[in-house]
Image 1: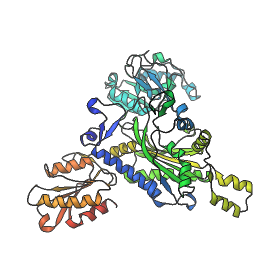
Image 2: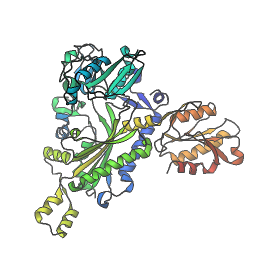
Image 3: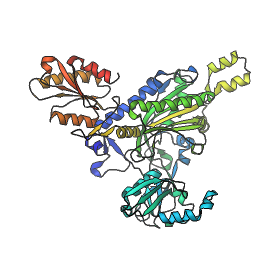
Image 4: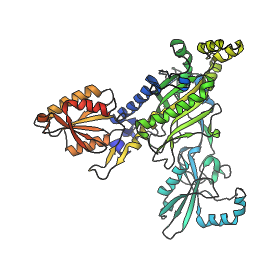
Length: 561
C-alpha cells in the first residue's frame, strides 16, 4: 500500500480532507494499469472473444458491446430482486455509533488448552458417537473480517493479551468444526482460539454477551437488522419518494433490459454475448482490505445467451476460459484457484457457479473472489418480461428449419424454436483484478540496491519502456529524445514510454522497477559511434546491447504484439 501511494498507483479518495471510507482514486500509474486490464478484457471478450476459439458443438463465439447507464428505471431493480432482496444484516454499536455487517463480525472464543483437553477426554465417547457438546464458553473478543482465517490472524497479530505467546499453529479440534489457532508461551502453556460468525453465535448466545468489535465491551451491540446495499438518489427537481432512483449495484441488469434492442438492431444469433464495463455502487457497511471491498467499483461483465439445451456446456466453456485468461495476464501459480460452488451456495435460479479466486495477503491462507462465472438460467429475462410486460423470447429460425428437416411435430418445433435463452455470466471486478495483479507482481529482492519491484506482465504494465541518457551531455539527450519519440509513436496505444535524465542511472532503474516497467533503454557514450543501445530487463536485471534502430522491433517482440 505504501508503494502504491508513493509511486502513484492508488490514493485515498479526498485524502486532503481526511479521506472517505470505501472510495479510492487511481493515480497516473494505476489509471493506466486499470485501463490496460479493461482493454485486455475488452479485446479478449468482445472484439476477439475467447481468442477466436469455437465453443460447444463447434459454434463460433460472437459478442457485442453495450454501454448502459448507472441510473436505470427503479422497476429494473424491483424485477431483478435487488430492492426486496439485496440486503445484508447489520449491527450498530450504541456507544461509538459504528455500524458493522453482521456476516462480517467474527466472535472469538479463547480458552485454556487444558480446559478443552479435559472436556474432550471426559466426553470422548459422546464425540465418537457424533454428538455435539453443549459447552457454554463465553465469547472473548470479536473482530471484523472477511473470513475465519483473517479473523484468527487478527487475533494473533493484534490482540494485546495474546502477545506473550510466541508460537501459533493452525490446527483443528473435535469441539468446533472450524479452523483453530493453538498458541503457546515460552513455558509451553497454551490456549486455543476458535471463531464463529456472529449470526451463528446468536443461535446460542444473547447479543448482550457479544463483545463489540469497536470497543470489546459487551451490551453495546444492537440485534441484527436488514440493510439494503443500494445507494439511492432522486431524479428531478422535487426529490419526493416518487422521484426515487438507485445507483446500480451491478452492470448486468442494463444488459438484460437491452436484450431485445440488441437482437432487433443487429445480426446476432444465439449463441451470442453482450458485454459491458462500468462503475457500480454498493453501500458496504464495512468496506475494508484496501480496494478489495469498496463502495464504488468497476466491473467487466458478459451475459452470454444460449439455447437451454446447450447452456451447461457453455457454462463449462466460459468457466474454464476465464480461469485460463487470468493466468495469461500474470496470475499463474498457486495463488489462483477455480472453485465450484456447493449446492447450498447457489442462488435458487442457478444451475452452477464457479469463482476464480486469488490468495490475497489479507485472505491467506484462504482465497478471495476475483470473478464469478454463473449459470443464471433464464431467470433475469423472465423477470424483466413479467415486470415490463414486454416479450423477451427469442425466435430461433435456424432451429426451426433444422427441426422441420428432421420431421418434428409442429408442437415440438414451436416449443424448441421460440424460447427465453439461458444466460452464462462471467462477471469480473476490475478493481479486484488490479489489486490481485499488484499483489502478485510485488516482489522484494534484497540483493538489489532498491529491493522493491513490480513484476507485471508486459500486457498490464502501465509503462512499457523507459529511455535514459546516461548523462545529460555529449549528445546523449538528443539521441534519447529521438528514440523516446519513436517508441512513443509506436506504443502509445498500449501504455506509456517514459524518458528520464535526472539522478543516477541506478536510481532511475530502481524507479522504473517500482513502476513495473519491463525494459529500460540507456543511451551511453558508445551509442553515437556504434549505433547501439543498452537494454535492461526488469526481472533479471541483465543487460544487452542491441542496434539502436532495432529497439522498436525488440520491444514489439517482447510485448507480444
